[in-house]
Length: 276
Ligand SMILES: NC(=O)c1ccc[n+]([C@@H]2O[C@H](COP(=O)([O-])OP(=O)(O)OC[C@H]3O[C@@H](n4cnc5c(N)ncnc54)[C@H](OP(=O)(O)O)[C@@H]3O)[C@@H](O)[C@H]2O)c1
Image (tube, rainbow, N blue to C red; front, side):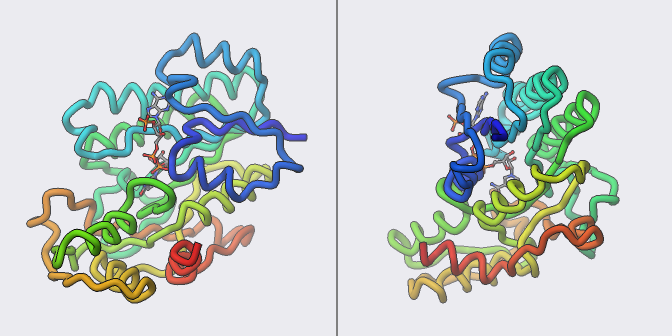
């Protein structure tokens, strides 16, 4: 039985992996910051020595982009060096490693979707620290899957839950019309991760739900599917402090050309999430 170590098991993606995996097929180890701080190199190495995982999935990260700007040392410690520490374990024990990454490694200025072959050019501390994490994983291991996704929502803090919260407490909100992405449920991201770890198709992947929309269209679909009312004021991203890269649309180019997995559309995925 494969021994799977979910690092950052309290994250949206970690919880989603736990909810979709078959416990009869995998032996699962879970840690989050409380049990094991991934920035503590010796602790991480010793956990690996004791537990000898076959597959490590790194969901742990500082994902709060404002916190990353305010505290770059923390961002690099967790997003870059934490990934390095887990890579050291993977290399030592010949384990596969999944590093989850983000569209923020790109600058968002391209007019068409980004493929895995586009050059990265992050504009933020979050994006730069995540790219550094990718690079460490590439440098220290060869059995790796670097999986970039975007606009992820699951059990935790995200756009869907924030909008539904606003619908309870506010009458109107401003939402960007000039920001585009592919909303991806954490469960669908979890499913592709669990599929890939069974293969030897190592490398970097873009894995998002099919199709794309503006932030405003995403918000409209959330309200439509839940029947909630909230006035959505179209706005430009530059006027909203929390705005993210303009083009966050990733093309699942490699998944398509090797034909290993088909993601659902973002609308199907959102419907499943909201119904659950
Ligand atoms: N959310 C998105 O839209 C999105 C999009 C693309 C890619 N991703 C990537 O997907 C992955 C998972 O994202 P997510 O949104 O599911 O994450 P999340 O919900 O923000 O959770 C991150 C987890 O990492 C933990 N953590 C932080 N520092 C740690 C440390 N030093 N040691 C161990 N654990 C630590 C956090 O614990 P505390 O809460 O206690 O700090 C938290 O449980 C990340 O790599 C992220 O970059 C996310």
